[in-house]
Length: 251
Ligand code: APR
View 1 (tube, helix red, strand yellow):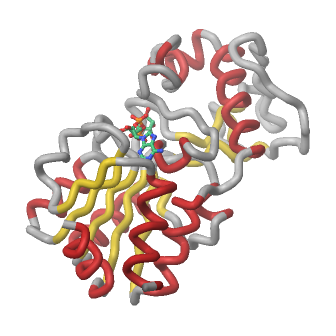
View 2: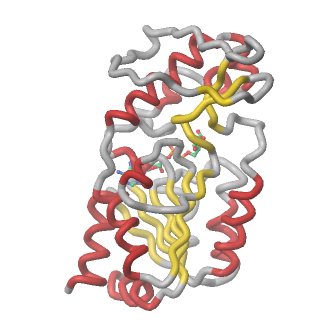
């Protein structure tokens, strides 16, 4: 199986990579649904990742995002992020699509990353969308102890919210269009560290599978894609991806 993966990888003219929280797990950023460490184990997505939940308890939601943002600021890209960035120097074209709101792909050297669920590093006014600049800080934010009142918009005085896509909100249309186009054109899709529960992003691997192109999944545990992808590699992204790269391009 592995030799097939390597051959396809080396011969790829357009690789699409789709990542989820699993690729940042080894950088110490909690995923959402992993039983022990998942962010959702104590709080429902509704409460923390929806406009309704934010309006009902802005201090809880903003405290949660500040806790995650500070974790992301202190995190470093891992070998999985770095390998994906290196693939772009070896192949004619690589399109990187992520559901992650951290900037570890960019800090590993990836460019033009399509963030389909927004960014935790920027914020805007909940009402008038006026941009909000986070102040520099080295504070340690604990959750849920630190319920933090969100800042107020300097323009209209309403709450500031993170620039992430909440449940029942539309994804950035241009990024989603580019992502769908890339999946329709590519000849290999690599799906890393996503449970595949959240649509419309979860449709992208299915689009590739329908096109009968080669699909490779790298995940620690089972997902619905296990029996659908061409190659299903179980294990940590930070271990498997560098291994694949080494065997394909350095041996
Ligand atoms: N290497 C590879 N895969 C891993 C690793 C790892 N080191 N650690 C965890 N995983 C896998 C888990 O097995 C799981 O399948 O990563 C996946 C993480 O799944 P989720 O926590 O559901 O994260 P994700 O798929 O990115 O969630 C999608 O849901 O909550 C919303 O907006 C949020 O963008 C998020 C979306």
